[in-house]
Structures are given as C-alpha cells and as structure tokens.
Image (cartoon, rainbow, N blue to C red):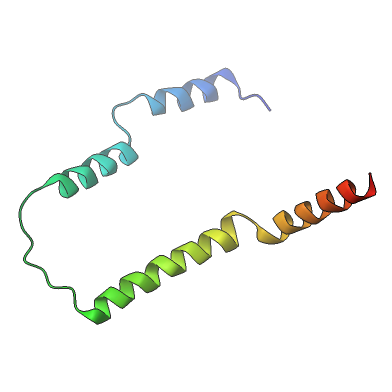
Length: 86
C-alpha cells in the first residue's frame, strides 16, 4: 500500500525534526550510568531477591510472548518428521 505524496512527506518530515525521544532517553540513561558519584546504597536480601525475581519474570515473558514457543516447537516437529520421511 502506497501513501499519497503529502502523507509520505509528513511522515518523513516528522522523523527529521530534531532528536527523537528514544535518543534523548538513551542519552539520559547513559549519562546517569556514567556518573561517578557514590550512591552509599545498601541492598538487603529482600531487595536482591526482588531483583532476581524481576529478571526471571522478564526472561519468562520473553520466552512466552516474543518467541512464540508453540509455533517454534511445531516447526521443529514438522522438520523432524519431514527429515525422517525422506
């Protein structure tokens, strides 16, 4: 589907009007990480377990919603069956 010239021009001009929000957020995050001011923070075991639980939940979310495991497994089984039939 092609867009009319005016819509295409608007979309292109919107992209080139200065830095994007994503670029600004990455820059701000990089500056925060690069700062060398000591935090004097204490992470107790409960907070550490909460962080580990968050990492595990993120990994499970990626497996469940990004990689589509059922479709992937069905594809593997189909290839395995085709290899055995040949």
